[in-house]
Image 1 (cartoon, rainbow, N blue to C red):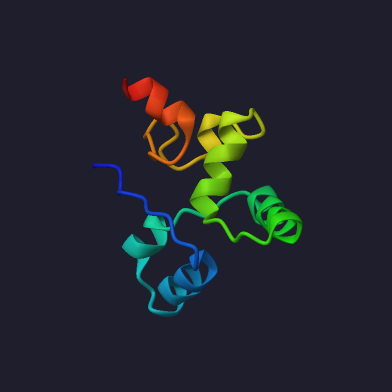
Image 2 (image 1 turned 120 degrees about the horizontal axis):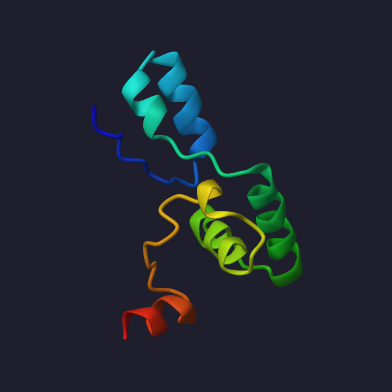
Length: 91
């Protein structure tokens, strides 16, 4: 059995509850729910800078800074293209 393709969404809670309400098990398995720390860090970042970043961006930043482990991140080795670490690795 192949592993379901996961996806990240900023409306993760809505996606999760919609999949539950629809009893859509395959969609439920694909929803990536970040650790609660990611939500708290994103809010703190917003309060400090006024910039609202995506959950993926905050999660990726926390991973690259050693705050999250690879198992906690959606596709940890996939370059996102928006940070210098990804750009350096592709060169």
